[in-house]
Length: 272
Image (cartoon, rainbow, N blue to C red; front, side, top):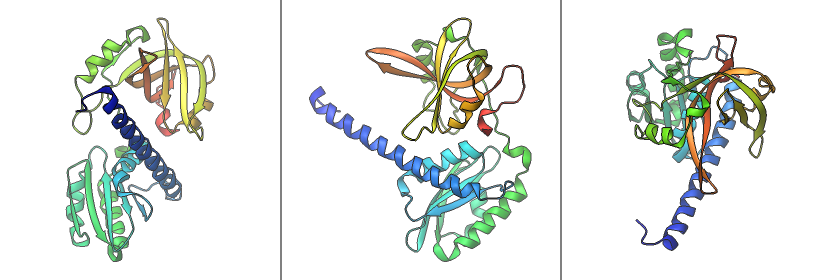
């Protein structure tokens, strides 16, 4: 721990820069991988791909983002050299280590648990491993498995969304495998304004209001959803609660996980 504010500030700045760099690298991998995914058969049950420029340190983050985007078991590799190292992330009902155990003869090494794993394959055996992963996945997952489950903890009016509520929810952290982040639902909220943001306008920001208050919501890599959110439309929104400090004040923001027109039953954001 730093002994003073003066010594802590440079450390905090360095951490901020490192985190920003990791986010940028992850976004680049995801962007390139999505191009490759678009070339796959629509019925593909698993994502298996790699590149020699994809840094090892962010493969897991990128795999998680692709699972979030496409809801398929995902295996991402750095393909530099003769030993290709990879990271895998899974979906509910698909046990990664059981899968990798079946593929063990093709692997140099592997380890992990049901939802996340690391693995190494020799370059000359990658094509064989890819075929094996595809066959194993197709045999164990059907169309129903690719419907993303959403568990909602509670419904909330926007007036209830205060920093104190966020603090209480954070007492349940850290969130991850086995301890999912609580999601809230607000019904029939009105779209006030929709815009995209980011250097390449890939992200979505929506100003919303209900009968009690207004709220800002964001969704990363969901700019295409803006066309479905004209001013005045009413939607049901599912979100995680975020809190950030701005000009000395705590401000609540919604991290959108899904939404639907208020008069229709099907959630649409995940598929946009």
